[in-house]
Every structure is written in C-alpha cells, then in structure tokens.
Picture 1 (cartoon, rainbow, N blue to C red):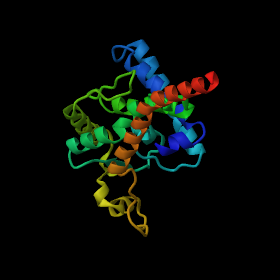
Picture 2 (cartoon, helix red, strand yellow; picture 1 turned 120 degrees about the vertical axis):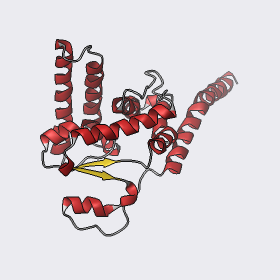
Picture 3 (cartoon, one colour; picture 1 turned 30 degrees about the vertical axis):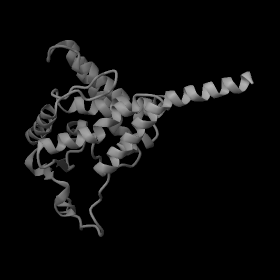
Length: 238
C-alpha cells in the first residue's frame, strides 16, 4: 500500500483497475456479453498493474490492493508462492480494520486532505479494497466509510480465506499468522532465516492515533480558515 502512493504511476494504474472492477461488478448477469467484456477489461487493467510492478523491479507483493489480484498473479507467475495471512478470528480482523485502516477512506475524503491530489485519488482506493474483498462489506460512495456491521466484516474475512483455499493448490499455499514469524516462510521458499526480528509495521495504536489526528485537523480546518479570514478583514478595515 505504501509503494502504491510512493512509486511513480502505480496509483493511476490501480485507480484504472478499481474502475474496471466496478464496471465489471455492475455489468449484469454472469456470462452475458457485457459482463464478459467488462471482465476482459478488468483482466487487462490487472495486467497493466502487474507489468508496472515487474518493470519497476518488485519481486513480491503483499497486502492491499495487490492481494485482490492474486489469481491473476498466480496465472502470470505459476511458480510463485501464495501466502495467506490470517488473523486468529474473523472478529479480530474486523475489529482491527474498523479501528485502523478502515478509517483511512473517510479521514482522507474531507478537507484539507482533498486539496492534495495524491490523497484525493488515494482515498477511494483505501475503502474500495474492502468492498472488493467480499460482497458483505459495504462502502458509502460519498464518504468512503465502511457501513457494514462487525459481523459482516468478520464473515468477509472467513469467506476470503475459504476462497483462497479453494483457488490455490495446496503445494503453492502457505497459511500464515504474523506470530509465526520468518520460519515457515523461509522454509517454503528454501531460504535461510534473516537475522533480526520479524518486521512489524502499522501498529494498531499508532494507526488509530494517526487517523484521530487527521480527523481533528479536518474538524478544525474550516473554523481556522474562517478565523483567518475574519482576522484579515479586520486588519484591512483598520
């Protein structure tokens, strides 16, 4: 997700894939000519993303939004290992999402963050990824807020895991929890375990605090602007 915004051109390609995905989802009955055409467009958009990822030197992908095209990645790279990261329960995933990354869309969809082109383009993607995970997850198209219940979110986690198990051959799949660390990954890849601790990013408390700060700035933005205008008007009047 970090590289989507920091690597030149990636965000635009993911936006195009998101639009192709939405068009395919709205194309009508499966098997109809329009639906088949939209699915072909979605595949083309996914391939464009993958081509850019490869041409920029990346040799692996992780997390949203790349996990949403894992089946296309499998087709393009038949020897690649697929790692399914899961939480202890679907509820644990749902709680984590709602308190952390699920706040990204609504936090970035308001001023002053909408004045920043990259964040304005990024905000819809941060919420769309959940809708693309499972039909049980609903997202408000205006605010980019997740409107599903925790139960629906937990169901989406469990259904995603079932779908991955059903579509990935057992000899290519590694089910992994972050607490498992390096050992099972390195064993599957036939690599030595790296020195140092297993990487740990996006701490829940830190993320939650970050989004609270973003939301606070948004709430104070227009009052601050009004105060500056009033001060300027008073100064000019004097």
